[in-house]
Image (cartoon, rainbow, N blue to C red; front, side, top):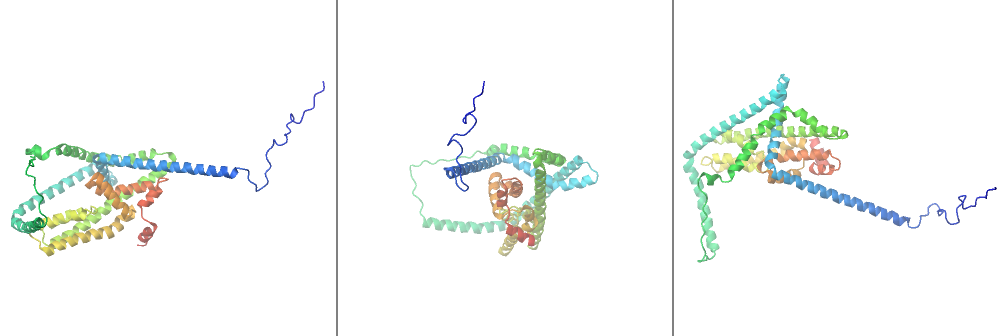
Length: 405
């Protein structure tokens, strides 16, 4: 039986008009431009949504971290204080290790020496404070004269104000309410007993935290690096090293500046014949290290000690000396000694002091600079956060000027 010849349709031949539309070179398909524009708009919308989601996520994460720092401030301040103390004692532990003392024993010796030093300084300052209190009755008459002058001036201002601004009429039918404060020890302490108990209990952990931080330093660092993926461990190790060097530089620099300011203040106080000038110089010098508020706190000890002893010229000399040392340390010593390691701009430092001072109080002013320095180093080494690290850091112009100096 002869087979039938295949027809063109069955042999795969294309029907007229059923094939692809021929397009000349350089000619666009109908509707292709509109499709490309729609695709580009869709991609832009996706990128915009991703950017908004990222900003929202970062904002919520930041607020959550700040809330945790605020409500857990006692715990976090204790941990960060222990870290700073551990960095301070680390050179002594390394020295003992070179003398073939095991790290555990060396860490215990360092912690015990630190506790003994603090107890000795506390006893010394306590005795000086008692001696100073014994001298107060001798200066009582002069103190009353000085305070009396201010009281007379305040009374004159009050009388003048009452003459200018009449008192508002009082309602005769008003009922006077007398608020009585609780008396006795319970009334004096109140709810502060529980807060003081919590603080004492938490602070008691500092020696143990410092000891274990010193003993398990290498283990903690290596274990922390292993928490990251294999491809990111090298960068994590370098980042931890930079943070460690930054904290060491911050501690050593502040200690050196504090010693310099203590000696300079003590010399001026000695020339003014202030009692216990060495004690006052040490306190005033290290109080002046507290950013911004330090200059005010540093004035209190010498001025309190000089009441009834100093004249107006002596008071002016003390004020100018402390202000001058504070400004010199902030503008000359800090950029030279500490600024090279931290590389933070003044605006970032000021905002950090404001934020961490509000969250952690007085300790926040001390811990603000190393905390924001740590944040900058972390941001510099995390992809996507380099811009924030650059915002916290110094500009290229300042870096070149510092390098030239």
